[in-house]
Length: 356
Image (tube, one colour):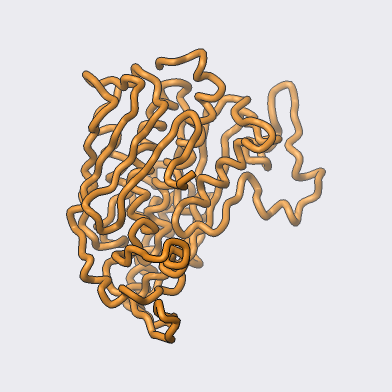
């Protein structure tokens, strides 16, 4: 296994580097008959692309091309090849890092694993790769909606010390600001936080929450292919993610069994502490997931490190980077959840439903 493919029944294989010619992926396993055009994918990519005021200033339009697998507006059931050209590369920004390891990045581990590395913005380890996950996730999202009205939505729950308040929560607000924040009272605070971090040359972490609704009961396979286990792997594969919670997550440490268990009545569940998953199988309740993203390590504040000869050096990262990677991680996390759901949907219904 190369580690560049994800999924069993709905598989994506990605390729490309941060400052290479292009990035892309091949999506295999999508049933035939799904109405699909470029705009279905582009609208999701536009949510993730850089260039907004509060994110990386790299100007990438992220225009996607569908090279195969779609004929006369419908998927054919054959592999779907997607391509996104890199048009605003600046490899020269990283020349001073050619033999230096940036602390907190994959530079050190990639070099020691492969014996060489692409130093241009992290190369293959860059979050630039997540654009193709969003593209593939757009296909999964559309299929899940058409098949069972399943929705996958995310939001920024916390940025640094700014946490949303549930009494102000609104899904409509998520669509109205560049932070994907559901609490309108916190948006200006987030704006000020980013401006302050830019002046300092520093970064901050974030928490992103994902909710999937209308997921049928019965998705997930025992024992090692549990739905929550696959979610954990999918979300942990996103750059900068250091923690994943499902349902109440780490709060269960302080709970009693009497309050944590989700009691059941003839009318349904009385609570959802489990986040919509029991024994690795979906319950039919909304799926609730949360992920923690570390502060970006590409910052202008000098830091200690070593070079390829193990000499002590001081590192300052130039280039264009996100003060908070958690902002653009929202559509990426949505995509990964959709890909897992698509994979498990096909595992259950795939043999009976080869077309939409």
